[in-house]
Amino acid sequence: MDDRIPRYHRLRDQLAARIAALEWQPHDPLPTEQELALAYDLAVGTVRKAVDLLEREGLVERFQGRGTFVRRATFDRSLFRFFRFHAPNGERRVPESRILERVVTKAPKAVVARFSLKSGAKAIRLARLRLIDDTPIVAEQIWLPYEPFAALADCPVEEFGPLLYPFYEKRCARVVARADERLTVETANATDVAALGVPEHSPIVVIERVAFGYDGAPLEWRLSRGAAQHFAYEIEIR
Amino acid sequence: MDDRIPRYHRLRDQLAARIAALEWQPHDPLPTEQELALAYDLAVGTVRKAVDLLEREGLVERFQGRGTFVRRATFDRSLFRFFRFHAPNGERRVPESRILERVVTKAPKAVVARFSLKSGAKAIRLARLRLIDDTPIVAEQIWLPYEPFAALADCPVEEFGPLLYPFYEKRCARVVARADERLTVETANATDVAALGVPEHSPIVVIERVAFGYDGAPLEWRLSRGAAQHFAYEIEIR
DNA sequence: AAGTGGTCTAGACCACGGT
DNA sequence: CCGTGGTCTAGACCACTTT
Image: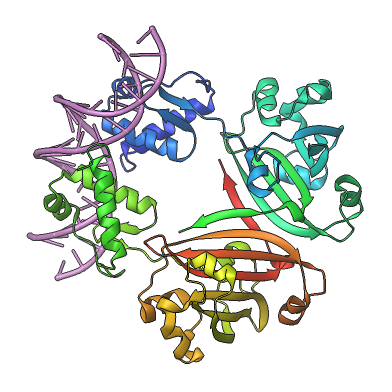
């Protein structure tokens, strides 16, 4: 037993592993802090510190009086973090999602590298347009390894729905736990002009996202392009 | 006494107020957790929770065996968070800072509004260029209310140095505790072309920053413009 | 060796949500 | 009303830093 790392840290790891194994669904609670203390032979205060960590990492949410629940991040808010829409009433809607293309193909080199595939392995490529009030906001290109997402290659594209990550979970038992994003700025190419209806050479914000599962393995690679005109990102620094 | 809010929260507020009053300098430690517990008639565990909050907010840093110290945020890293430089050796240097202009003037409307000044009040405007290897990276326009920054209007600009916030603290006893930043993208205007040496209409990243003191009052308003070509911002989302 | 923050325990009571 | 997480206490021991 590793005595050097604190117990609440070890408990965190064990609980994180059980969450990764999808032992609990987002709607039913984890065991009580009392129960965990009993099961792992720890004081409640120590259990609380472990759950504090999980909460700070965004793996669980706590509700006084109700319990502690695993959390599914809603990464689609990232669109809203970056792009501000002057919606008439000011409320946020999930943008409409239009799958333009879905192809299964031999993975190009960049994709092989991202997902550590064997060369020659297959991959799924989606081209998607996201619109609000029929106005295109962001054009996305999404790459997935064929394994374990084969189910997405077969089912009708109409079933995809506006959010992909819940779909991945339902159809392929793959949960996105976190993601890395990288923002850069380019100028509009011919494809942008056609897809987004922006002037040629106008600034385009490019968001590259790699989404990871609980095990840290990359699940999805996504390249989004949107008119910089709508872009605004706000942060607080300390 | 407000019994509704927890004691560790109240202690946090009291300590935050003492930090705001500059009662401790960054290099000498706060009282021991033991001493605080004694002074405020609390258990050590409760004191620890209060200090946990301060630490999470970035107001203090803890070092095992040494003590707890007030922290001064180094916001100039934000330049590095946004703009990547292919420095030959890869190391980060503080960019050179060149004050191009310093004027005391009647505050324009936007500045009056930001700082809640009386109309007709004076303000200080700085124009600054930041360079690495003599290459201009970012052009900044900085607005400060004349009070309490009058000292900056008189001293020679050579004394300003590469970082402004420590200078504010030394000369004007004003400490920046946090800041809000807003990123947008525009296209290069004639000023950008001249200052940054970029092509006309090329994309420009605009960073607007409002820096606040411990009391939450705005201290500085800063508009930075840099070539989008060098821009890249990376975040992790959960 | 003395003093600091970090870990861990055991137990009491409080505030909130659902029954 | 009961069960949940949240607050608070008091004290023991550990790990690290400085003297």
